[in-house]
Image (cartoon, rainbow over all chains, first blue to last red; front, side, top):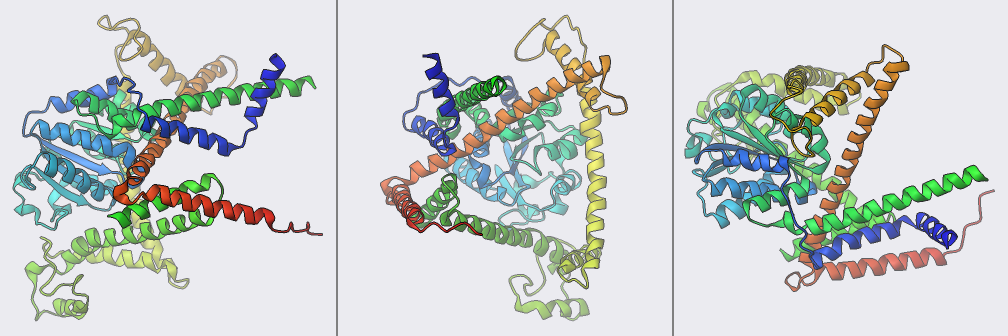
Length: 282
Length: 275
């Protein structure tokens, strides 16, 4: 019996990798059709982002930066939507910048859906899309010293001086809070290094899962107030604001897929262990 | 909207088809992606930076004077009216001729395509490297060195903290941070051989690093699964009748064509091995 089990495990270890792709695909696909409704609990890092936004007085000036594109949309867009929803519910003024060219598309998409269609807010009075400027960290540095030097017009071509909510907004220090929705470079780390740390303006972030380890030291040291870590971070934030969205709907698939991957890792290690033992024996 | 959905589905499935094997669909999607990305980035850079912020500062509408030599030169380019509109560029800038310097450096960087003039590109690259090095040195020193040292300096045994907590601050976690920081730094001290007691401590540092790499791997997997979920959500959305069942049709056509291709490959005569 034991011999049969060992042979079975070894045969699983030798399976064509395309079968593994198929199993992972099904593990992701099936929960999307048949949701399990697994519970979502906010982690400490997500709770800190929520608390930081809650602590803001109504009509605070919040700078939201979009640093992601279509390739990372499933991870970052749900959290950008959730953050905008939370900010607009609390009557904050939102200023949107983009360090990535495709971030402007993402921002337009999110603002149209939330600010225009859901909340019916007025462009230029409640929110403004300043748009993309190339230059990476130099753009952040430029925003810290003089926004108007960098942005003479917004993304729609309107002169910044003619936008009502831009009155008395000249540099990063004029904002009460920064939120960076970031998928890489330039992104959260550049905002910490060139804006939040030098000016003392509090900031939070939402990042792709792969970036979490890089950003976590800043969260641990208090330089960043919390972090939304990938799709689970978005789902937790949606739960906190009581508005389930794309992040929440993907969490069952995420959990099942992880379970399957863990099983594959365990099988792979058992196979490796058996094979090395056999090699030693013979 | 329907055409967009069909293109989106085709490109998604074409890229995913690489999991089966390298094939024509994947190659098409890959080349389309590279081409469109380059075109999009170029046009975005031009219309958000070069035209408004460079040309807009060299020939601003506020100082337009058709009789001046500078604007006569500008009017020569009037044929490209979307870039150089009549009456100067109205983007809220005053004239700053100092911007001729970055303009010249930018053109010099483009000259790297010429084998005879490529040396000129070094000037632009030298400026960029120098500026970036200076800018980054400040950021890293301030946030990564000073900020992190400040963050690591905490009261080790604080009576207000619990002895142990899985999440959040605790005395136990403070010790973990202390040991991890010191042993991790020790591992990167190469002026002494990693043997004896020092070697044992650096080994502890390696374990901390390995846990960190494990967490990175876990997060990487989570990120990739999230992206797959995003694509599947779109594919499910586009499989509805609103989009004429785009996903189902394209998937069927792809499977049939890839299957036919695989069948033809198998039935082709096997080439004899080269002598």
